[in-house]
Length: 272
Image 1 (cartoon, rainbow, N blue to C red):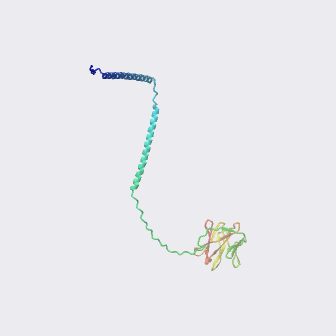
Image 2: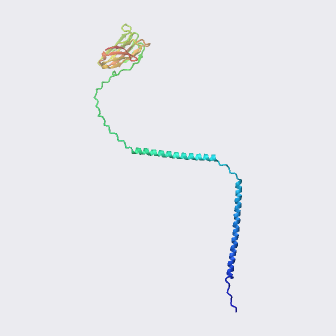
């Protein structure tokens, strides 16, 4: 029996497998290198094509005017925003300063109470007795009556006028008269006459006034400076004379008379 031979380490089956693997790796590496070279060549061709196209393109002009306008608008907006912010900041600062000053100002002292002056006691002055004759009368309108028309003068007295003069009657019914045609009255000159019937309770006073066509009032002046405005009567046509009458209190029998025109000018006076 022939003994088995020992395999050669340099020519055995393991060595053949390793060599086959190395050969396969070398082949793969060559294939990859060829692929990369083809890719780079393609990239170069594409780059050259884009370059040729770019040379044929003419660029449009840059819109400088539009860019400048937009830049100016942007600067204006920034300035406006900055100014508004500064204005608000300034107003806030001023308000804070005013508040600080008002807060720092010391409060004004309260006014000292003013003592009320002692009430003066007015002396008691006796009030004069009010009478209807104590006030100065206002101008009296003249009442025009018909000839012979009897006018109720109050308290039982009646008065009427005729062309001859004045007529009157009292509570006793007796008639009296005062002529303007007997020559005792000068109707060209302002004047007054006075007739009176008195009693302890008072008196009735009457008379003529004449010498004016603008009589304003006739006053009966009694004791103590009292004045009583008389009622005035005339005939139609303004004859230049008329009749007056008035009632007065006790003691007015010696009263005086005064006649004024419508402007308040004294025309005639008859002492009491």
